Image (cartoon, rainbow, N blue to C red; front, side):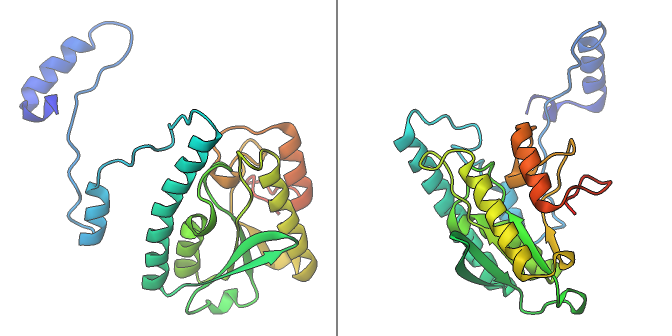
Length: 228
């Protein structure tokens, strides 16, 4: 990186010169080392090249879209299965009210969680991480939190455009509430703007219709914008 070979005095002088007028602020380029305080396997992961294509992919048609989702999903699924084996999390595919889900169970369920069940809407913006790929984050939650988790394998476009994925999530939640004590259930994703824009990893404000549907189905929000 350009600033990596400069002394501190040189960097200071360069940045003072670059930022001596009103306007955009400039910062020096820098090289961030791989931390030595983590395990060798995590060092390898951190040092790996960025995945391309990634979130900024722009498929030209439906076929290209499906190939993109499948390719990235296969990569993530392989890593997820390896994670489940190492962390001792079992995964069972099943169906709830016509919707495909995965039940993830850790080797040991914490005593305080024996009668609790978490429902996870996996990350991917309702367009990424189909199948096993969507169980990566709930695998960590199950292993380190000691919870039994239901992860929803919601439908996705281009074959199943919005609101198919959202409908699947609501169907699973409603069916789960009917067969379990609602007070012992939690939906894992947080909501910002008092809305469901964090569902499925989304970081954008959703439609008012989507927000209302989730809010009403899941019992409203508490003071921290979490589903009750």
